[in-house]
Length: 319
Image 1 (tube, rainbow, N blue to C red):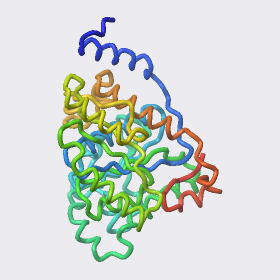
Image 2: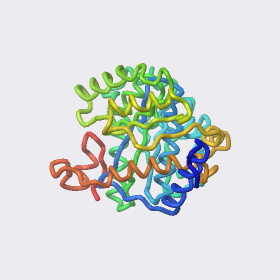
Image 3: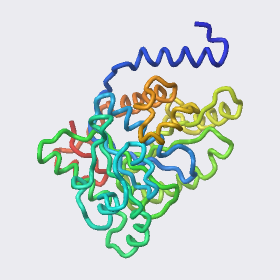
Image 4: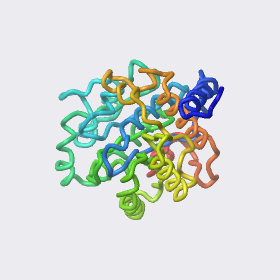
């Protein structure tokens, strides 16, 4: 195929991806990997990235849990789970000590993809958490208890957990940072992309110093990439120069299909699995899965399932 024009090159790339990724199963991680998807700048694709990466990993045979920690509940909408007022949600987990097992819902479209939904009640959680003892650890403790209980009952292990955050550094986001071991940062390929990133990294360092020493930025994903513009190319080069080890090779293109999917209560993986956006998220998920399949350092291995589930990073059971 002639790849001398941008359109032809894009078509050829999509064709290669379809061949490489069709029916492919991804390797499970050695331990449950817990990601917080965060960026203080709004509109960069945090929720879109959360649900589509989760869907891609689940379609490749892994068990994935999405915790919707944003009062807007957009992740719950995209996954097609109930999240109207009165539905047991993240709010009940944080405020009322309801076990995650009593809140979790499995998506209909993709087996193995689960969601803890967010309702409008979560908007008041920031205020209610102020007076709660150990308020920063509420979500971490709930997730650790859930993973430990699954292990105790010999249920299949959750391979990946993604926590979707609001675009601010309130107690909801702090809870997400304390829960996770890894931070995934979506960065929009636009002029203001890197504004606020240094502040986000400073906040992560503060969380690491005082609340969660295991937290680190493991993954950066470029979103809304338009290879036809010099600006997108420049942003991409700058991000890759500053974060060569963390930035995924795959960039997510601007795609109408990605934007349309949530309005149908779907991820782009189920809305249009053959679109360029779906294929890009699938390839990004494969990169993440490959990194997680690498054996951890011997010192990082937990001696048994219980110790792993109770570890501060909420790693869950080892494989």
